Length: 354
Image (cartoon, rainbow, N blue to C red):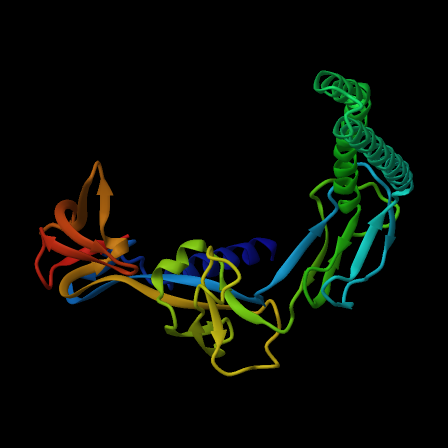
């Protein structure tokens, strides 16, 4: 029985294999060749207007502002009378330094000068009295001409050095007073115009002064305008020219170029609103695009399609085999987006754009 089962199993196994389809031979393998896709863009030589433009940015700001500082070094700030946002009037004292030592020196000098002025005046009066008495004696015949001349010389020589000392002392003290007055003037900060305090240096009171270092800023909030960020912007506009400024969100403002007489300085160009806008906040940014040059109806290519090296310009084209090749061109105006083509390629030619 075991032998019979084994034979039957083997027969079935091999019979089953014989029932499978025969393996196909001689089949073909299909290769798909992908076309090379260029990794660049193409541009066509077209005819149009080449324009060179520049965008100028402006900031809405107060036209008048003062940057105030003390005029002396290393003195302690005694009082600051204002804070940011305070309204001030021209002539208001905004801050001061300790001046006790300077005040005492000034008082001492003033007292000494007043005393010397009195002594000088008294000495001159006594001299004039003695000279007058000598002249009267001479007129009455009590003195000869020689005696009179000698008396006058004695009177003048007797007080000459004393008068000179008083005058020298007054002159020197006067110089000291001028220096003290200059130092005292530098110890105070006054508002030079009506306005609003826009900034006060942090922890100013109690600090040490630095000559010329800005500590307080006052602005005239009643007069605002757009100021061009670059000084060269003034050369692109004329006095009174109407200009539309556009903010980043597309808001447009009709403005007019401010005259040099009205502008706070002659370095920047200022644009005043043609219509007041109370909602417009200081610090708003806007821009205007100005045309610097143009070439109408010329052959042109995008700037990105024109290359330059060693003072020569060239473009890249495809030859008949699809290979990249260089071709020299001549150009005119290089605009903001397009470059004028004056030779080397013709209208309709296709070039490679970088």
